[in-house]
Length: 361
Image 1 (cartoon, rainbow, N blue to C red):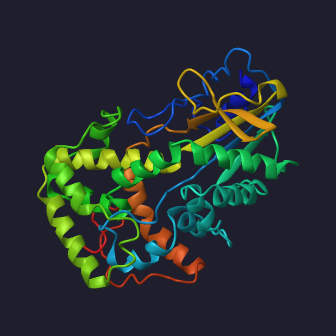
Image 2 (cartoon, rainbow, N blue to C red):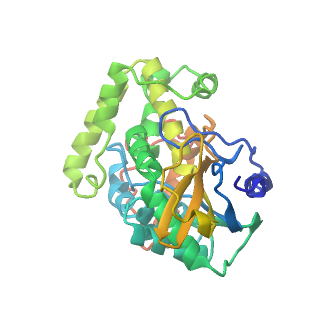
Image 3 (cartoon, helix red, strand yellow):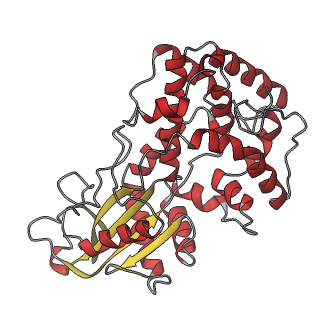
């Protein structure tokens, strides 16, 4: 078995930050089975040597912008920087972590992934935020290069990141600016949106035909917003707004619920745990991780590892995040723009301080 002490270490880490140590995989076909509750067995006759090591990666958003609903005066700025880059700049981080390290994780290129992981192991602020060896957290592992090689090979081989990226792009068709527009829709004026969504804590099912049609109008192909001129952006945005305002309340609530799931997917952590196999088992047949056993990867003739991938911190975000995010978006973007030396224009902005009205409406 992969040592339980490693799992306990992650539980204690999240307890420090006040989070409930209950980790599960959303039931939307996106992530691998959760291996933090009972680590997967290696299989009969598959012993390991040396300490188990584990790396916790927070990949964040796969793309910068995914929606045509982004406020036009912010579109160019938001297309340049990832959400984590903007958020850290707004918090006063003088040199936010480069977007390149986050993008590299989703590139599928093993060497790029290895470089990003290795660079992040030095400071563990992102995308790698924890490293454990033998169950103990290590801030500066002596064999960082070897660890990054193994973790990158595993992530490049397993489908998890590909599935996560696809889910992020599919579910997040609103962006924070779009959430404000939905909240301002006439059909929701007299409803306690947060209370209603709170009663829908299960993972949402498929959108209705009308809601999915509107989602398809709002959803932006990755990278397309940055390559489109201001006039075309405005036209697409106005079409999407009109479609949203024509929806009934149940469909609007489903759009908001799906955005909360997308927000959760943007914040999950992926834990890769591995142990080197003994020399007697170096010829073990390579395999992907499954619900009944760990995966096995062979890096060379004399080096093979058993591994498990887990998804943690995947709880659905509270409904209070809807108005909270909208309320704070203006100051976040303006502050980040100042830090990143590219302040966006806010001349066309309107809307009240409570975030009930969409920017620019």
